[in-house]
Length: 66
Image (tube, rainbow, N blue to C red; front, side, top):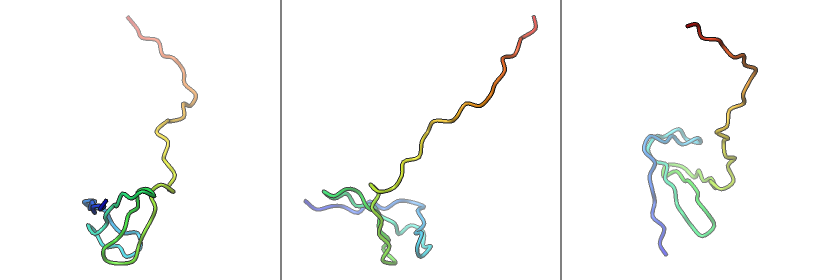
């Protein structure tokens, strides 16, 4: 099985700062992102997932006038 490089438009390398050279590769071990310019590599399965839930603070009901 050959894995294809999927380039990410607008992505900036956190190591060298070059734009549009970051690509993602899917392997049996998981997904990883790489930079074509430098030796940056990062396993995406190890990254924390951001929670989409927002905490609800104190609130007070309002009364609508007729």
